[in-house]
Amino acid sequence: MIPKMKEYKERWGINSDDEIKPGLVAIERALDVIGNPEKTLKVIHVTGTNGKGSTIAFMESILKEHGYSTGVFSSPAIIDIHDQIRFNGSPITKEELNRTFEEMTELSGMLTDFELLTVAAFISFNRLQPDYVLLETGMGGLLDSTNVITPLVSVITSIALDHTAFLGTALNEVAAHKAGIIKTGIPVVTGPLSDKALQVVSQAAKKKGALLQMYGADFSMENDELFKGKRNYKLCGRAMKGEHQSMNAAIAIEALLLAGLPLLEDKVSKGVAKTALPHRFQEIAPGIFLDGAHNPAAAKALANTIKTEFPGEKVDFVIGMLKGKDIKGTLDELIPVAESFTFITFPHKEAATGEELMAKCNHNRKLVLSARSGIIELVNGNDFKKIVTGSLYLLASLKYR
Figure 1: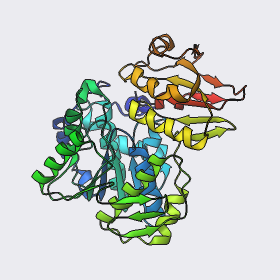
Figure 2 (figure 1 turned 90 degrees about the vertical axis):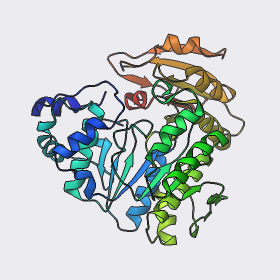
Figure 3 (figure 1 turned 90 degrees about the horizontal axis):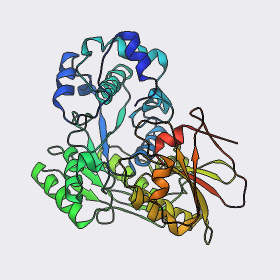
């Protein structure tokens, strides 16, 4: 479900399928039909179970400080289709996206919705010509519709179990999908990997003759103030909370260096310090935070951030999740820092009900709240901090007071 995409499809008479159909044959054929706009772009390709959006945000900010223009393709939407295709930090305009869909009328019936959106991003960036495109996979990597480009550098932020129905139930299976973005002779930057994941990724890199640089082994961030990698940089601070964001910043810097950018220390430092991203431990009102932790690995990182930012405190969680996620594993990671859980049934066709979520929670303080008229209101009425987490689709639907 891509909000507001239907309006453009109907306006231009374009049909596409809303089912997920991994594979590259259809999108490669479609791109050939319209002249392969993706081949004109300088791309940094980013996959990973968690950390993709934050890593891209750090790269985007650092590039901006150096005076480069940027295009970003990301998912899911924060508000609607426009913020999934961004130029110089701003969502694509309705006028630009309208021009793009006009160019795609001959692709009607050939693609899924996400494939169509990927093509729309390539067409838009081909017209706008940003200096660099930061391209986020939708799911996995090997069979993801974004995996039709030859990037300057490939980035794998993390590897954990997620989307198991499509990517597999074993870590080595997920790793094989993530490693699928590695291209012949193109360097690859990764976050810290488990032994099983590293074995898969390193074998793929060796087979493709790709230089592999892993966080903790080949580059690092020390005490949030010193990046050590292809070059060394002193930093002056970071707005994004959590130890995992320190790692994401380091991955971003190393990736840009391997892409061949001549980064300057003061501009790297300013870029990292200014980076912000919606729904990443974002305080939207006093005591109310949003964080899109939708799997056990992300929930563990969120719990660690809570322990660091609010030592000795517990928080009230408001949670809504999609059915296909590891719900129990995610909740178990949050229980040690939870005062209570409120589970939400929110408007999405793949959302689990609040009752389904509550049944998998082993905490003694829990309740269910249903959305009315598609709108959820948050009321912060006690002494505990409130953290809304789970699906990014839930976070996009919230209103607070």
